[in-house]
Length: 258
Ligand code: G
Ligand code: MN
Image 1: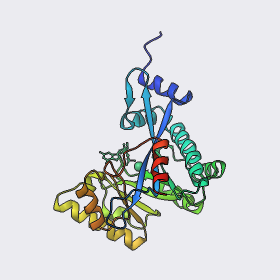
Image 2: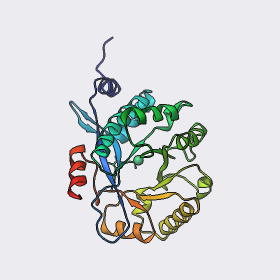
Image 3: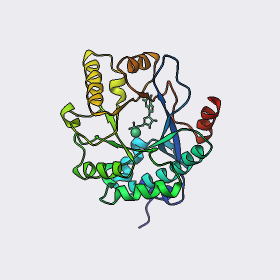
Image 4: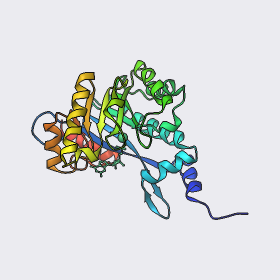
């Protein structure tokens, strides 16, 4: 029986024939009062332009890749592509680092050594890679993920907890996590309720206690930016500051600020 190709078939084909691309969303240091212009880091984000259906969002194809067991391949393509790109910028003299997302479902015991190998292969400056792990959809990080975090850090790779505050997380879960950075979910960054103020203040207090860098995600308005600064977030990311863009556009930002 030869049925119509499913979306999963198309995704598998896109992965194997190199049709996935990488977009880069800039992150900025929030020190000072001006609108930040020079990115200090980029987050690599996978993009899929379907031949018939056009762009398909990662919120759709990443869960599909997870259930098809190919998310590891996707994470690896994104890491290899982005690491090569950022290494090239570093060689040109730009002080920029890279964040990549990993799917908790593909973290194996050899994960840290695979990542470290990629760093050395691509010539990325040691210490300039951050791996983002997310607590969603499960309210707790998987034990397999928590186990590799110290190994990553030992290999000189930073660890960031992504989308914090977007799920069912309790502050207690943060206690003594072996991480370097926490990214505050846009639902908190954009929060206007008293409860989200409390949550923001709580996260920053925790982060200060443990020496973690704090990134406010989803900064879309001047109000979000002011608020992130008021609460003492170190870095910001979001459409107001810069949407995910091509490598060429990032290059323009880097050279304009020279
Ligand atoms: O889960 P994570 O934070 O890694 O997701 C990044 C996603 O969030 C990307 O797909 C990106 O396009 C999207 N994104 C980035 N900045 C903003 C923003 O300011 N607002 C909204 N709604 N989405 C954003
Ligand atoms: Mn992320």
